[in-house]
Length: 84
View 1 (cartoon, one colour):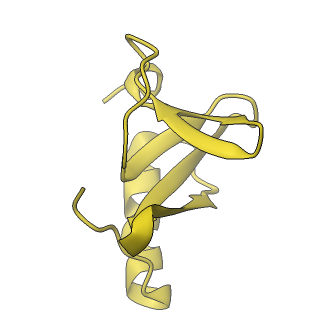
View 2: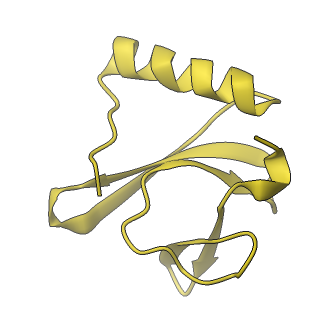
């Protein structure tokens, strides 16, 4: 997986959206690995009951290390992803 193929996040008027890299269309209730191109960082997007969305910025530089970091966060802090 290449970095540029990842969905990306945007923050507009206090609302977080995740968009498809190829089409730019919003992805409702997205959960998983995305990119914040403004901050040049990977983020883990999690959707919880009542559609509350949480993002966790990752320190990883590559997709592979970001996926390992997500597994670490899940194990250590109980951060999880709910299937959309």
